[in-house]
Amino acid sequence: MLTFADAYTNQTAGQLAMFDRIVFKGHLSGFYPVKRFELFLYQQGVLLKEFGPYAEKTTEQLKAHLRAMAKEAGRPFQYLSAGYGNQGESKEELARQIADSDEVTTGLIAIFGALEMNSSLTVRGNPETHHIEVVSRQRKHLHYYLYYLDLEFGFMYVRLQSWWPFQIQIYINGREWLAKQMDQQAIDYVRQENCFLEIGDVEAAQKLCDKFAHRRWERVWDAFAHRVNPFLADIESSVKKGYYCCVNPCEIATDVMFGQQEVLDTLLPELFQETLLLFSAKDVMRFLGRKLWGNFKAEVRTSLRKRHADRHLLCARYLTA
Image 1 (cartoon, helix red, strand yellow):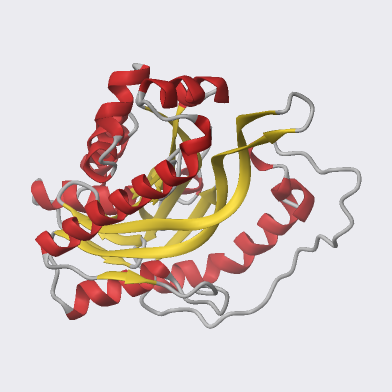
Image 2 (cartoon, rainbow, N blue to C red):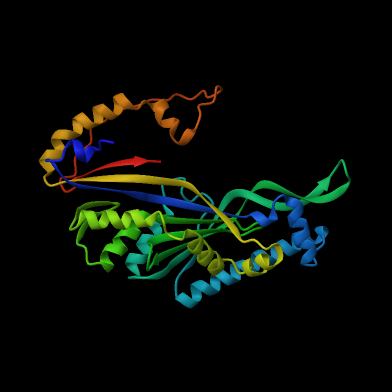
């Protein structure tokens, strides 16, 4: 397939394609269907009518475990307001600010507690059978965000639900990983935010990118999950399963590097127009096989606005969500 860099070989200094932002979501599949969770409670000696106090106790134990992690690392444990993020605040920006101000170079940056909606397991009465049973329902409860500067993955976070079934979410940035790998192999590069503007050996960097997809990711999930969830070993011993993780969502990005800003400035109007002609707003909404619902009533539009070009940004980026 003809790539953008192939079409403009004389103008570009190289291109780099790899996984960018990735979110892994982990579910304790041994608890589903929920009858299996009832069996787990029975094995723990917990009656269904005792689930409420039992769940509150485990939630407190989880909080104590995470507080101890923060204390041992000398890092802050901070609760965020219920409306945090509604006014544009970012947990990521807050974590980066803390890392910069405290000069954190590796390890745990901070742990944040945030009240968020998620599916949780609870017990309630069934009016038809007149018995209490385990059900799954949406409710708000605390989730903990553990931000790290990891030796392999750089800036990342682990999000853990504070209530059963303790769903986990791991965020990794492929560009962060690549920067760490190039540091180890002494490959020079210039990076601005999440783009690489220059790379001393693009071919070697691309080979590193190709290895990223073949990482033993189950080992990554397992290591982080056991670090943050103090109940996981007992759960695995009881139900013979740990977290089943899937990718949702992820981005694949291609950075096209230019040797001169003037060349990119000349090409950008053509690129913008071509993109608008090739992809309508409805086409974008169908990415990853998604479908437009027949009862969708909102307005879908594509717009083109002029933006002041950053004279130092010698890179064009294409994202596939």
